[in-house]
Image (cartoon, rainbow, N blue to C red; front, side, top):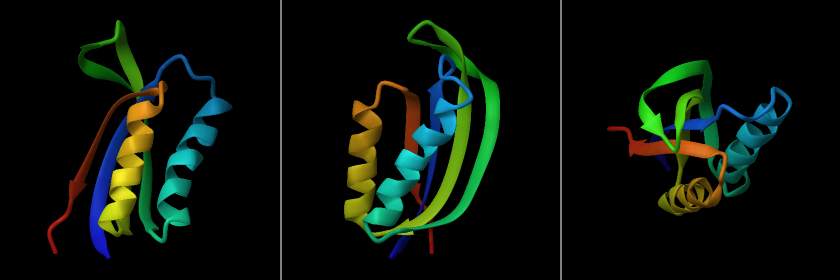
Length: 95
């Protein structure tokens, strides 16, 4: 398995009850496909560097995980179709 890091920004319009549900959905994609979440960090509400879809703020999350490349493709697909994700980035960490 390879090590990856993903940062995603969720829509500021989500309620405090919806945030854990959305985050759990993304981490479940990793774990249900044979991956492992190594570290999870919630950075909280922060201002975006530039306006995205008329939004100036978002909820930031950082996840370090180990998985196969197929898991990364599935996670990326889920990020793309989710309306609540403002931006995301997945990078492979060096060994």
